[in-house]
View 1 (tube, helix red, strand yellow):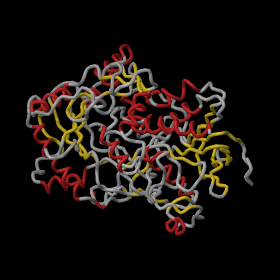
View 2 (view 1 turned 30 degrees about the vertical axis):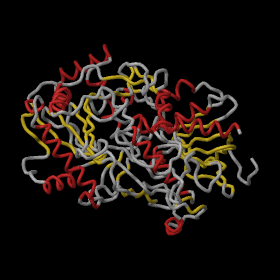
View 3 (view 1 turned 90 degrees about the vertical axis):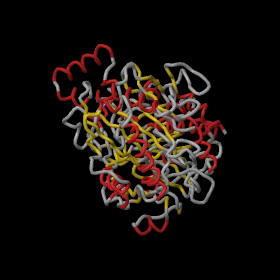
View 4 (view 1 turned 120 degrees about the horizontal axis):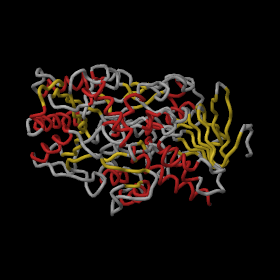
Length: 540
């Protein structure tokens, strides 16, 4: 490589970030044996058994060994509260610590991506990549795939609260939906999970591990990328820290950033690529003024409704009863079923906040347990369950900024939740729908007492104050390296960083708009499509 930089190792392609997207890219690109690739992951291997037990996310997320432990700055729309933002620091990334609910979003989400400038990312364009990633146990059809690395399964025996939630919604004339990743997203039904035989299928498990024996695929864990190495306006490698030592890894053909919606923009900015005036004020040597880096941050904000119940079998009760807990463990060990085989949500519902809306804009999720906030306090001490709801496509936008010039400290995350009036309108409409569910059988009969929000929350203004004091994230940050064709876009529609050769971003940060539901499947799709773009360019 004709540069003045000395490298410790060189490869054709280097991928910085072994998360949900990075594992896909590493697997797909190395299908060509002539391409050498190094995958760098700051965290360790995913060997903790709780990672692979679906319900184990409740134990893994609070563990700083597997979680970057980010948090927002005080949020003006939430009474100055800071919101905890878990992000995976382990092979498989956030896909190794998330709740396993496998929802792509509405088909129209991706048509909107294209309208916003992501040419070639319409639903028609991306559907083949969604299908290619999947091994759906219910079989393939026009919308679903089979034979792919991600095994998708249905919940075998939904809990009593989940069944009651679905039944109550159908009595309110909400249509039943048996596949939210099919023709339409509207309706109520049970979720599918990225689970096979009671085990989590992350992209590390589904894509990467079966291919680690390839001689052209090199994995380095415990390797944190600290700086992009540039030769003029071309990325030629990345500096990493391993066991306290710095090394330089050369990328002969391409450097791919797959650190996620927080770490990818942070690495760009710490390397001098980003909003020039802001970086200069931090003492960063500006290499390329790119105003959109770290901007357009989006996330889903969640509101909980918690219910006490006399019905048996909620996880709150089972967890605190030694005999019942033992039974749950035995059922999982012998049958790979039961509560341990289920993720964060069993039932979901997508509805329109108002009949005039063209597509659903509110999502509900029902779980057979209850808690109050970001894994801090654990499960409630009473038998209980909850459902949550959020605005599918919020209008509020935030940003990520460096806290220090080298990007070593956690960045300043400004989510700016609920700073747009339309988000409040939709959230209040969602609360009205929620109250209808609560008053409808058979859900109504399960509730012995509504714990949150309490009886003091009666008016719209009461509810808004409840949101400000209690709402939290659904863990879906995206948009901070948005792709598009305008001057504010960070990446082009083929995910190349504008103005820098040999550098792409492949993760949720490139999404122009947050999908209506979870972002994990869409992140995998982005990486699948990006892999084809990368291989196409490498052949030229």
